[in-house]
Image 1: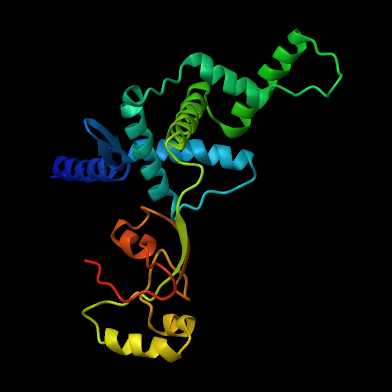
Image 2: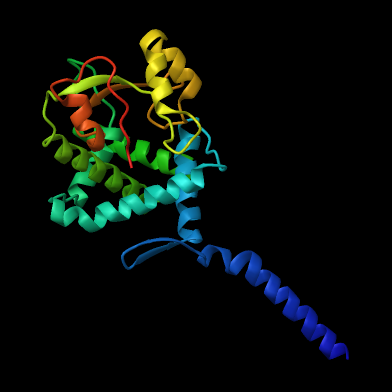
Length: 245
């Protein structure tokens, strides 16, 4: 009986250890093609960025940050997998140049510099940063590579953006078509009433507009289903109600 009790207690203890310490880090968190992320990967990334934020005097909001960092992990992996097709190549030399840009002291204008002294100060500054943040050289270089890749992607995308694009200033009243509000009644009210006041009263919650229904300056293509209305020959003033699926 004693041996049985010991075995049961040991079994419960082992199961508790598995549930509390072994299983959680291995729980699936996300994937990109055949590359998977578990909760341990997410925790590792959070610790890395906690170190960076501590050094910069900030704090990590653990109520929202895990979701953001998981999304960043996924986005970084997508970019890594697509880099060759996009022509984005970040090598060790690029990373070293960025490290030196960040940690090599800048000499004042006219001041003579000693390359050996600058190299020494670079190494000291970089080492101090790693110590202060608790990061390894490899951890930080991963972050730097991701940052450089994002910059390269932004530069690539900017090449396809015209310097000047057609755009209009938009304010709208957005209401559900299956609701209690009758569109004809809204159009009748707009004849004599202020647009903004009606928008404040009737607008459905939208991620694109504020409480007044103001969206701002909108380029062509931002809302493809509205392009004909916004950029047509008659696109001036208050436009008729349109239905969007």
